Length: 307
Image 1 (cartoon, rainbow, N blue to C red):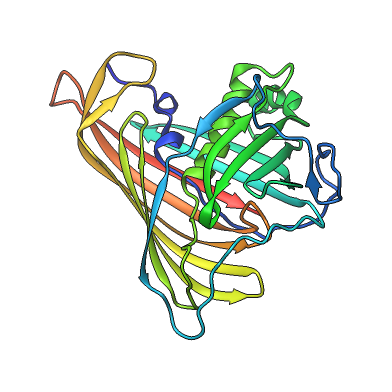
Image 2 (tube, helix red, strand yellow):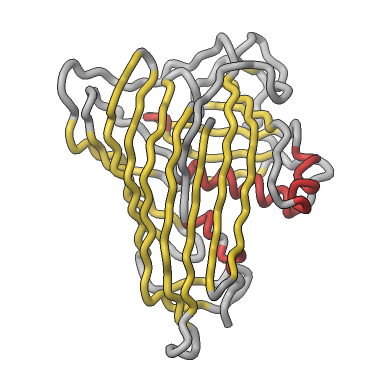
């Protein structure tokens, strides 16, 4: 028994990326109630109706602290204005002449809590998709809320999603998948002083249909004021040969597997989300079922953009 391509939830096994340029304008999706223009007192933390999604923790190892004067890339939350940025994700699976792909474009308005710098609150704008059926299902999502717990080094810890009224399961799944893709490919910053040219490695273990070990090698190419530009390469490998078919008790055996990516992101220490960049992943896998002479060969892809 072989799974249909998109049911493999590749998004949960792949991850984040980033292109374009961010905007700090405050005239996109409606904001939650605020005590100041750029921060909010309305939090999704502790809400009983919020869906809590843990983000796999990452370890950060500095390989080279860089040349010149070193400083700590500590968060400096901007509470003077909200962040407006658009997240665009595209995930795909192709096999035997068939290709399933899903693109979601999601405007976000992000505000730090007025009193808690680890709490980032987000309001979704008009979420769209090229697929007309999904696009229609996404319409009720506009104005819904999400929250993000952030740890040291701007590391995402958990995502909170409030249910969008009138939105069906397909729309909610698309929003959830897009945000998780981005957060699982985020690049936490070292908590020790670094300078231009610094290199560090980020490692995560991601549990999905296949348990994956993710390595991100990051290089700081420039640091101007609060903005850091970071080049990244990504390599993901399965920890074992088991592929669990989503929604089923059946499993397949992984015969071969590759998944790599490259990109660049721009981080602003005053903002909770990346302000620009792109990471593009591409891979292939061979899944073997009851008949070893008839393996399922698949090509996978993921692009995550911030603009």
